[in-house]
Image (cartoon, rainbow, N blue to C red; front, side, top):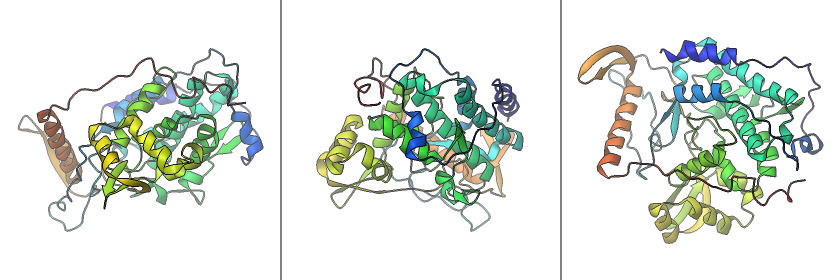
Length: 373
């Protein structure tokens, strides 16, 4: 694929930061993590994420907005009884990463870029950036690290199967910022959830699973973080993997249980109010017609395009009825065909177009300076 050499070169060329001395690798306790509290006197510095932005546009595919319809179970691949590809009822929601098309050099460049972001904190005082600049940094670092580790482990059916030095991926402290070792979960809960009071921040963090928030096709930065988080919230809340009904009761994603101590102390009331903030017409009707709020919806399968397995059978791709020389796994071709059919349905229903939000109170900006010391 033509973007890969360019992507590899661009990522490696982005290593413009001077290597910093090795710092003590402390285990993060509350006292250590207190160093990441945002400053009350933010400065004007910014971080450029254009390289990651290019990468996301190249390797992330959107499956489009949810139609709130379960995808049917696909047929087995031709010539075999084994089921390759995605079978999840949520497979036509969210975004997918093209892990199976990444070569070893590209995957190594993810590690280089993650280390660049870590080293940025040795050169720039992250805590003294604007709050939205800090938020973009933590979200990007988290997501770069997740993409890196899943790419290293692929093929794998579920990201939770991955271990780093014997520790489950989400708990593994392989990220080092200012000499403090952090896990993806540390970044989410002990830094961002602790210091940002708006639960919309949840939708920036990619877990590598179909059942979680989407990986955006843009890098986060101080200017777009509000817009991308609102987009992620609307995508997730108004999808089956975010909210659905069973027996007259509202069932919601497990991620709301994880975030409850930070954002939803009166769980049912708070989470319903949060969902209503981003709900479309169908979801508002769902909220009105159900009771409770049960955080039981989950899908742990990998959010890639091939289902975490290499399929031995391939098919040719056609364009305008003409077969091309580019061959892809049958399961991927079937998924892309389902995606095309879904988009045609969206067009027929007149559900095209997006809404762009502006003049937002960006997460963590308005009204929070007095709360974070």
